[in-house]
Length: 247
Image (cartoon, rainbow, N blue to C red; front, side, top):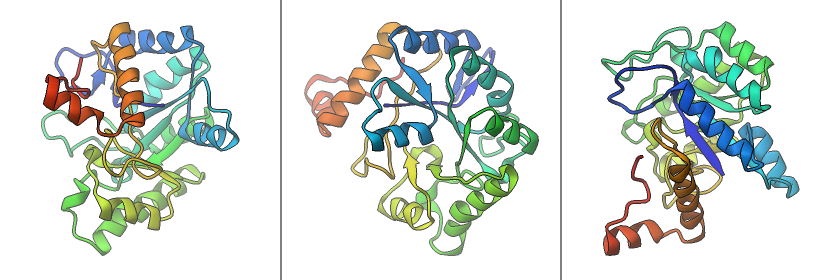
């Protein structure tokens, strides 16, 4: 089971709904801890799965590489003995999230990336410029978004980058194959798709307003999707229920 966040910060308005307040984030982490679960990097989760010892572990992931991962998330995780993987837009390190016009947020600096890695966090790639990969021409540019981003992050941190995360969660057969060919060991998506697997791992997304009942519901929906891949379409078509509804 893998969870996904983006930004953890105080906010008044967030039209993209990618921000969780520190208070809500702590409530989510306590929810995990109180159930005997431990948040870990994807690196640790995958190693435990290979040994058959992943019970009780939850992969925690953060997309985009916002500066608040270093200033807010890392200290918060340390309180619970948790770690996480952060997927960074390599071409924007030390800059901001200009891929989302109107709501720019600071992206971690090289120093913050290295500090996060030293604190036990895993650094993964979220592409070079955060494009919608299915719209990117094949060949050189797609290679840059994947391979160049990986190389840049490895040079910045001095550590191997094994994981990739699709910008906006968008991917098709071409993108899944390209990520594998680029040498990544795994990739995260957002939702369950026909490509679900090692290179399109679905994740659970808690929101700022998500309480205990919502967390339980998301975990259940995730488990149902994993066991019954067509359950989302069936429930939506027959009963009007959307397992991806936010709240």
